Image 1 (spheres, one colour):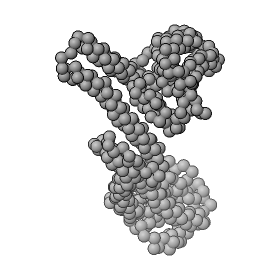
Image 2 (cartoon, rainbow, N blue to C red):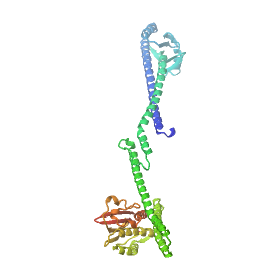
Image 3 (cartoon, rainbow, N blue to C red):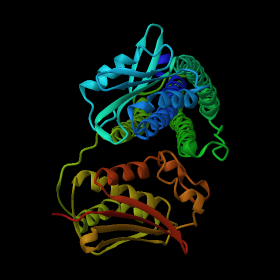
Image 4 (cartoon, helix red, strand yellow):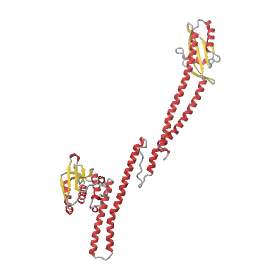
Length: 466
């Protein structure tokens, strides 16, 4: 696993990025709010002093009262550290100035450029190492509104700026620590959250052909992984069933091949054990031909099924008269049926579109299977039923020993036999029904089997001819 493809890393980075965005936004909001609050406090104090100055100046009635105005302003501004006030009469003649307030001329100059409606906007500037925020305004002197005084008030905000610098530094340090801590907690939570996935990986590592019984406890996994666990368990069920079938198939195939090979070897050893006439050798060769023919049919059937498993069977399409095909097959098996003492009948008509040789082989397998497993005196019925838009049904029904329901679904498995109801198991290789199913499915049809009231019934449903 590389870091680039690590889910833990992706979740950690995503969690850290989200936390960083939230913390940065929150830090910016807090810093802006604190700074706005301090500015509001400054403006509130400045405006209060401006109001005092305006009230004092506007209350004067004559120039003789200027000395009284100066005393009133001095008393009103005592104890206000960092506050500077300057009052100028018309012509910029200073009337009152707090100690060290010469720098207010810069404020007056800025206000003079755009006096507006009498009060300038707050101005922030620096003088030396100090920073100030101030406001200037014009105030009428008593009743003489034509000769207004100019009042400038400034507040030293250096301590506020120093506080904000320290505050922002501390704030961003905490934000950085918070981001790192969030990333670590995100990594820790991601690791813990992915424990069920690692458990699934451990179970998967232990899976082998000889150990397919392990399952994930999907009840204990998170809801988001419940479907994955259920799908994984279902996959293991299918694999276990497939391996079991493959193992059974391999064993059955070895058993089926061993019998003719053993027969050939035995007959050959017997033939070589002593000198024999040409006629005797001819009989042995004829007997061997039967075993070779059995092997050839089995190999051909296996190749056919292998093609079916890989979807390589592509049937030709032609109109097939099922009644004609069934009647011809009944005639072909007449000798075998007579030998077994059974009777075969057909009723119904119908046509389908498909490969005539394949369909004939599928029906032939059902008829030969029914003849082999029907007791003497029994009647085998072949029924063709046209179902309109639903297609055509071909059914082969024969009397026989009831097949347990557990075995019905496996009758189409290769080499599968239910010994309790197949008295002549040695006459077939056990591939006929599997081939029949492959042929039907290649034509887009379905095949089913049922066993009721002593009757075994195979049904094929296929589309009608165009």
